[in-house]
Amino acid sequence: MCGICGIIQPENRKPIPENYLSSMCRTIIHRGPDDEGFHLERDVALGVRRLSIIDLETGHQPLSNEDGSIWTAYNGEIYNFPQLRKELIQLGHTFKTKTDTETIVHGYEQWGTDFIKKTNGMFSISIWDRNNRNLFLIRDRLGIKPLYYSLCRDGTLVFGSELKAVLAHPKVERRLNMQALDLFLTLEYIPAPFSIFENIFKLPAGSLLAYKNGTIKISKYWDLQQNEPEKMKESIRSPESLQDELFFLLKESVRSRLISDVPLGAFLSGGIDSSAIVGLMHTLGVSPINTFSIGFEYDTYNELEHAQRIAEKFSTEHKEFILKPDILQLTEKLILHLDEPFGDFSIFPTYLVSKTARDSVKVILSGDGGDELLAGYEHYQAQKLSRNPLMWPLHKLMPPLIKKFPPSPKKKGLWNKTQRYCRGVEMDKRLRHLRWMMFLSTPEKKSLYSENFRENLKGITSLHEREPFQSIFERMNDYDETNGELFLDLNTYMVDDILVKVDRMSMAASLETRVPLLDHNVVEFLFKIPGRFKLNGMSSKWIFKKTMERLLPKENIYRKKEGFSIPIKHWLRTELKEMMLDYLEESRIEKEGLFSSQAVNGLVESHLKKKCNNSHQIWALLVFEIWKDKYLS
Image (tube, rainbow, N blue to C red; front, side):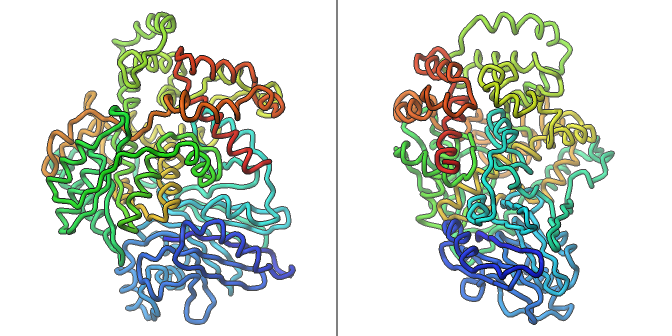
């Protein structure tokens, strides 16, 4: 696991200064504290910060083929590299290292960019082909590893694993992208290909960027739509045979992710996803299994009891901690690591459990992705309920009545769920699924956004009319209703929220995180299964739960979902109150000219007086203001 960065410019320019590359590399030391490597030519510069996982002694990067005509700087893991290596040796290639990186240069020599279709892994890859003067950037199928790029006015391409590496190049401009800011305040994340800066982009998952002499072309090399849609709509196979195949695929996915020359472990929350990973590691003979759980002082945010049950069943070397973080210091630290505004509260526990695990291991297996693949969230149930004709009369009667009453102080109370459901059914049917993922409605934006902000946006447009959502909504019709909603989340929320959080927070602690549930073979299989096997009646993750009955205690499989969160609404009234009032102070907001100070004050005051829980809206504004202070001042 590493962090990469690089520069390529059109021919016949002044040589690229080495200090440009070294400055970019310094910004991502946390991604690779073990080693640093540069490759410089007149018009090309590749840099790597390395976290040594495989082939600790000879795995230095950037790395080339025998004659130095092909170079790669690479971040990630190719899990099937031993098989690829064997195949390439049989085809006449000579290897000088034992690292997976070398399969990239020889694979490209043998098959061109089609080599990527043979890989199974998580990665962001750069390949410099000197003879053809082509540079390629490739991101893994599911977008587990990040890759940012910017094409400068003079045709220079700058890229990096994190946005801060791109910003370190002096030719890259810092201009706030208003459309991206609107998306952030709506969703709490910024979907690819956008970033918070104009002219800096995220390479979408499953994509390849080709650069030659100042121009770029982006194409998809993997897409779920490449499967045959008619095979997704129904399955004639028995549930039992589907469970057997799912168990086999998950077991093989975990097996491939155990490859490492350094100690590894697993996050363990006690939920079915992380418990399944630990159970499969035990089945595969891993011993000892290092597992890690954290809890907070607030009892409602602890799941340690459930994690302990799994740890005892599989005899793991279990470490659990009740954390009392310095929330003020941590807030600024983590926002800097994220590079752009990001509002998911669970960055805190993700970073803290990563930091805790890093004291014992360098590699961790995580259960991320299960909810987005198997309909694990409540909003999938809400969406299914909203399609039931028996509910339609209530859709007209309930919303006006519900609005007359305040929310419950209980985070997951039935009343609050009913209120969210009613707000959802008031929306366009196409947007109901997104309602649970949205934090500002159109009327709220009109109140919060300044006239200047609204004019810059050229009006407030519904999400389903904007990219990347518009094209995804069109393709949802290839699937049944539940799978269509999962397809939407897979291509937006999962890649641009969940995986961003996991990558940035674990790499901030110099910890490599592997996600077996997001093996592309598992993903492709699950999207061929009808949605009724995932959301069976109102039972979420049905086929996964039935599959895991052979491995896990039923108390863990069928327990109520808790989630991985923190008491942010309390912190905004206590530890974070002074910071919130400082950054959202009236004169500051008015001077900035983006938001209505009156609307911001209203959100803050009603939250402090406990009239409403405005934690999502306030946290997003606070994150943006802290980010803006660090990156645009």
